[in-house]
Image 1: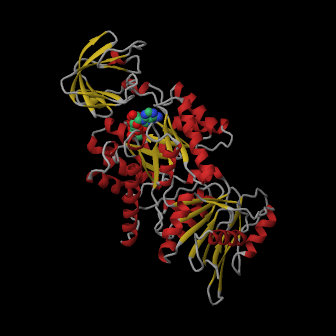
Image 2: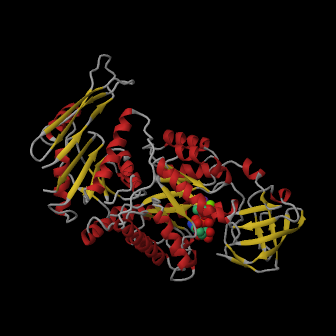
Image 3: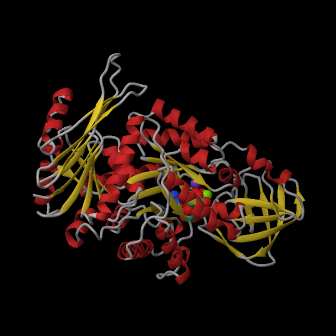
Length: 573
Ligand SMILES: Nc1ncnc2c1ncn2[C@@H]1O[C@H](COP(=O)(O)OP(=O)(O)OP(=O)(O)O)[C@@H](O)[C@H]1O
Ligand SMILES: CC(=O)C(=O)O
Ligand SMILES: [K+]
Ligand SMILES: [Mg+2]
């Protein structure tokens, strides 16, 4: 029999409202313990509850108020998860989510499908590279894959930003800079064939801003030059650290051991080209927009209201990329304003000393977790796999560390965009994630992180308490899965924040919410039509999942819901 704890909160503005909460704890021996709490709160809340015999009493009441009916309907979950659940059972599903940057190596339909099969949860397109037509064709293919083959891959568009970077390499995929060579960095636009060892720069003030003696870092130091001469728009540079130059690589320059960033600080976070790309993203209905080189919360608030006013569903999540000194300074307010964050270690490592990057990563992951925002650890996780089929031991250790920190997601960049072994790289992320997650559960490690209260309303506080308790109960009772019925995804993310031992089945009526939840740790998002009647919802879910072989009789489940704020513990009948 189900044991349940239900709350019912509505924000009725009635002036002479009456509110109370009644908690019922039903023991197996039918001893009912009731608690009655009088409430006076402003703004007025209507809090009532509960059921003496399971869920039916309350939910019937709720349905009567809302008149929502349940259609028989079906349940949608992505094909990979379904196979994983059937094969390995609840416990061994992967909790850490995987983002793949799509590029020339992976933009074909079959290549995208191979990544989906390999566990890609989110496909990232980087607006620094390629044309809008190219990106549109990738988005179309991913959508087709989802529709035709039952995947739920979300799409993340990453803005170019207006930091200083190199142009393309006249069509070449890379160029090798050797020690002692002199290269020219120029703001000229070359129509005709450009001279050898010549790189264009996107920023007109470049030649004025650099000084002879400055150090010029490509891609955060993958290649280094020293400025030796300025001739009009051309800047002659001596290669001091050889390496591979990639198209549109970021450029930073350093003087007397410090990053020169006065000009960068004046460049807008979202350039006019970025705004056009954002319009494109809104029109295409991407799920996430990742904003490069965020400096303050202001720009994120601006973008969010822009999206809200223009997007059909008003619902594209905004991810702040933490990759500049300014973003580290304003970390908490930026993350608070955003729907998630990315530790963009590539550019971050060009702005702060490399040895500080791991600590910055740890801090960003921690702040995101506390503020309940998903966080992606990105860049160079498996860099050597761009060229080689196996990773270095150090790379495996780096991936393990990000999983151990319990980041929501890991991201492939060049490894999947233009590397020779995209599928193998994804397999490494997948197997390392599974191994570390298993270790965590076997060791019965408990969270050391204090999760602060983040609710901004009383109703949210109840959701938060319910989710924190449900996650704790799930660990203590060693349940097989948490079920959450959520319209907007909020309660699902609160459960994820607690990083419980068991997987979280998140049922939502909304396809967009379902795809967005794909970025969050431990969530298995399902699309399901459901009502406010929990008994009906549960029965329907059990029969649909049982029919598909994803759960079986006897499995122990804790279910929570955000329409009817409740916790129930039960065995699958
Ligand atoms: N759409 C694309 N077309 C061609 N090459 C791409 C594309 N996307 C990525 N690449 C290649 O893959 C490499 C790594 O991709 P990634 O998106 O991490 O680039 P990045 O420029 O380092 O990132 P960011 O600009 O966000 O800091 C790029 O340097 C580029 O060479
Ligand atoms: C991902 C990205 O933008 C970076 O690492 O710089
Ligand atoms: K970018
Ligand atoms: Mg970057």
